Length: 485
Image 1 (cartoon, helix red, strand yellow):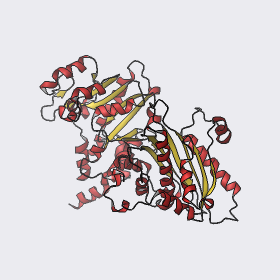
Image 2 (tube, one colour):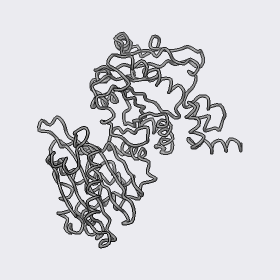
Image 3 (tube, helix red, strand yellow):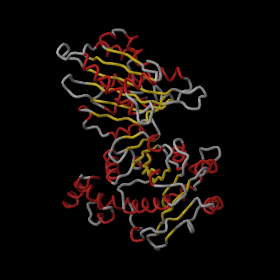
Image 4 (cartoon, rainbow, N blue to C red):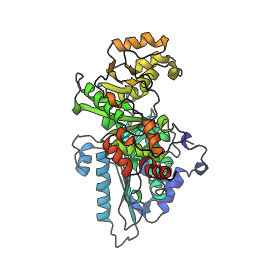
């Protein structure tokens, strides 16, 4: 049983893949098509083997040849086949066909569905393990519009046959969950790993849509992927939709800002704007080929114990409203973030951070689990075109400003720090706004929690308005409590 669901009584008696397929087959109303490209017809095979498939499978096909595939589904603008756009076209085309060919008058109770996948398994050299898109468009009620669940997977196994088998199991889990667990998307997500170990496959993007998922916020589902150990990082765009990290980061220059953003303050935005200016002044960097990422770590979300989903959504809404792409990760150390970005891009990278964060980077205790210690970590962190843009720190008591020139690291780390500093890997943000250095997110949040006035001027105007209008961070309740006291 996968580690992610061990200890949960509800998952102790997980139905077998054959039992799941048979239950679908024996439901006289579930009826649809299977279209699988790139890894055989492994999902539909499970339904054929379970028995009673004639009442469920209208058609099973696999357009392996590219010309055949293009003739059926059309040509993609980028000429690629393992994409979300291809999956959407497959689902739309097959649903249209089943509606044209199966009479509603003759079959008024049929629940139509179209399951599809387009994948690339491991190559012969075993350098590229493969990935794919998997999805289902389906009805829960015959007179209701279609729901859709689509997800992106990355294979971890080193054998094509094993990958094919895993894909087939995942497909059955998805179809079964779509029909029998749609009322609880979080559990549906966990059911996708029935009889699959997280070392076999990674799900790094998932989106729900349709009438049964109107109240589902896909950003929250992204959080579940990281929380359940299904992937190390997820991303969502300013419009709130989950996006494939590879699509966002591929061959891009990347500028990342890590923080709690609880809430987003004027300091956060000043750091963002000034570091972006410096980054764009670098050689071979332009706005068109750059992606800016606001990153929140899972450890940050767990700062006060268990993850507070309302608190997470408040932060997500604020960042998205400011037009930012957000990444939720399971990376505590910065070098892991850089390693992750390096999977998708060999272009220039920048990290914007405050003085305290940089001091922590040079703390050996964070690297004791590495055989090479801090040197191994720094080899991964600074092995390429990476630069740290350092935002200054103001001492609240003395008023002293700390920059890269006077920050203090452990005596054993002094020479290492000097090496990176004098080789231009650390650059100070000098044109910062000195009037806002006394603003701290935790103090702003405390003022909101205590129902105090005055926090409004510490945040971007749009952020302040959203907190009040949408009652973020329990603003209204806190204000009412303070007034009663």
